[in-house]
Length: 391
View (cartoon, rainbow, N blue to C red):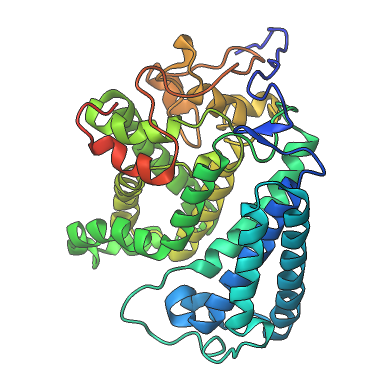
């Protein structure tokens, strides 16, 4: 366990020319930056207008009562006007007019739908029962703003690979995964929980189940971490070792750049199977909802952090908690690191079952899938595992 290796952070060969991303010039003054900002602002404004106009379809019921409507109205006006102006700037600077045109189009559509003056009835009384879950467009917007505000500065100030840009190769694919997973969060939650609720309905009235749910919350959260990590360790290992399952998990490993957004690249089959198996013992044992919520916060934060482009090693804690360095090695395409570090929270399972790999202070030089690689693009990756001979 003593770490005597000389620290080595490999120089990045991922982005040889930081003025080019996927063949496009992103230099200041080319209109690329203003175009991206314009699309982001106008898109956020349009999504907000749609959420207000169709709250029962596009927003989470539990959140509707808490939105500060006067503030949203004022911010919406600023966002749409700014997005439109950045789109105009991009049009004037860039030869390819697609970015500026999309930004302006989004702003105009939002304006035609009502813009900042759109009626907001239906959002105030958002706790009504619904026959079916909604699409959580508001959850996507909130998540994107939060994670960008937290991790973009962290990855600029404490970058492992300083020459890796924010909009690196593959960011469009990862953003699509982030969007879909946030949009369908209520549906995915139901799909992953339903098998446990059906299979273990017979334990609902057991006294021992009630006793477990009455333990101190901190103790329940620790127990949940241990149980879920043990289950996820073996599920994760199975996705690596069983060829049919690897077709789906290879999508996650197809990311060749590591940052906070890369962790979103997960096939829906991978998500449903792993989360469904993890939830079964939690439901059967009867842990309190507050403890499950606390665990949910922890797993979301840790899962995002361990993919991030940050150089934190966490000292001796890295031997007891899964850290970015530990998980970066799991994503490495180097021979010594393949099929290693399956744990999500606690490396103890890798120690016990012979899959632990953490070579001193070193970080992997590259990431990705060796051999048959999935294509880029959300929809191509969605159907790729089902193709004959895929993976």
